[in-house]
Image (tube, rainbow, N blue to C red; front, side):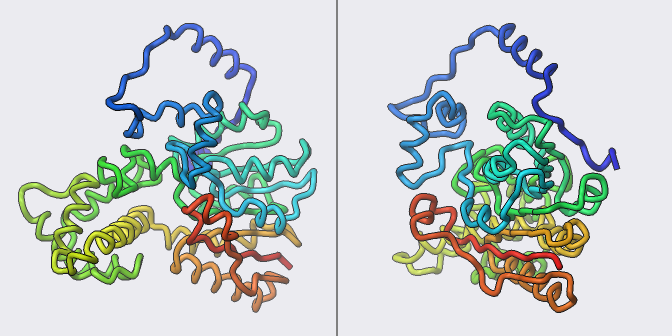
Length: 369
């Protein structure tokens, strides 16, 4: 159990003392200068990496409908809080901690009474979020963060549950998308990785290194309904049979661009952009076994909920939504859930304008019998 889950307790007195000591001991170091009047790369955007110090800059970026680099704007917070109906003293689970925005909103509802357990498979981001929560006054007395995949909800519930409320946000956090070193986005040059936990499994580059056209084509169709699956798969495999295999995000983007060279010029730029988004999504789903993980989570979910407990799930593409819808519907038919969402709940038009990354979001919920 302990081997599988690396529990991270937040905000201890010793850690605070050590942090202050470390800060005092580290000599001031000038940040690297950038060319031009505005920072362009992820590493250069020092203000976004220190949001507490540069609040005005952060708000200015948000007001333009953009997500500041290295940050994440939580989606449908009001709808989630309204449904979960959290009461002080309850025990809850955030199955996908991420930047901690949803967790923070739920913690406020507890009013200092109760506890939330928060999971994240990403060993890099969970440390940052744990500190962020502690700095905002949410320490180990009310929140416990656990570095584990949410497919292990049964083990977490066995030790800390059952839970009065559970939230699972299945989207990739903006911090991961924006960081070129993680290789999640076709918009930035970096290693073609795409793993939520870069310490486990194989990277996307390794996954496609020796794949067949048929297997890759099937992956693209199944995971993202890719309409150019044949062309893209053929081009990727052709390149990888040569001496220089695809190993970076830009190399994959170029391969996709080459694959769509027969698309009419007036439509090509937009089609390449959409195709890149779908291909990267398909690879991310594959290397992280996202469908298998979600299926396992949905299967174990009922036993992790307290009687009358509530669960809300945010999905971001049709495959996820279909799986969640089917599981909830089957659960109600079997007498596991007393109520399930009849229709999906979508973010408001205003939220989609303020945060374009919210546009594809769908929320479904259920209440345990």
